[in-house]
Length: 160
Image 1 (cartoon, rainbow, N blue to C red):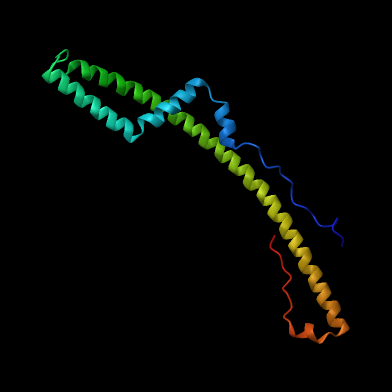
Image 2 (cartoon, one colour):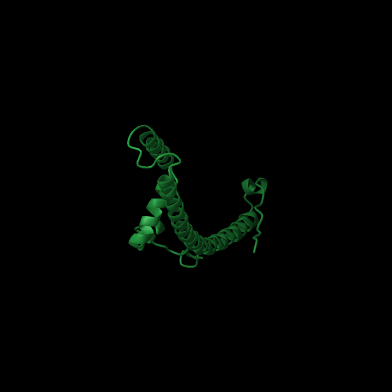
């Protein structure tokens, strides 16, 4: 058996960019904005800034200008509008994240299927090597080399 008889694994080129980079380049401006807003609203910086804004609003309207006196009806209106917009933005971002997860799962499946083919080819090569070793051992045993008689014989089996 020469080297041309041995099955080779599939030759896959290494991609120049990752799946994430290629996907990010296909996003629309609105999708990028939704992602940026989702990432911003889901941060401690946003929470801290929001609490600071609320405290400044209450302090200014209680002690100084009073354009929105207590119970801060204008502030409640702004908070209600913000909550409505946040809900919509978070739903858009969640929908996009579901699409990304589905695409990644499909990509992983393709990678796993290709790896399975490669592993099966390697198992066939390994089996052929075990058969050749058993044949060589039988030939050496037939010749009568005492060193080989003391070594344990390899098992020749393969899972399908």
